Image (cartoon, rainbow, N blue to C red):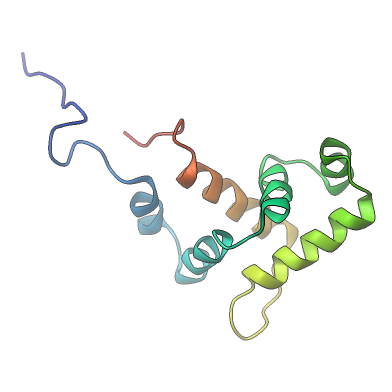
Length: 111
């Protein structure tokens, strides 16, 4: 019986970011790249939204006012927006946040 590939076997593991890139549109890949440039506070809000929390719950979790969270969300949208000013909806923002967190989380693996 053949041994399963180990982490040391060439080609046994797929880089998470590379694997996700194969499945995404050019706009989605660009948003993921821009997400890496978010500030710490923006990233915290971004990841909580990706986990499915609404702005009111994000505000509560981070001990911020709802107005502050809304302002941060607008900054995130402007930073992630593709060139040409196309706006990013809440669903798209949450989708990209989930992808970004999975691509950058060492505990989440792609076999």
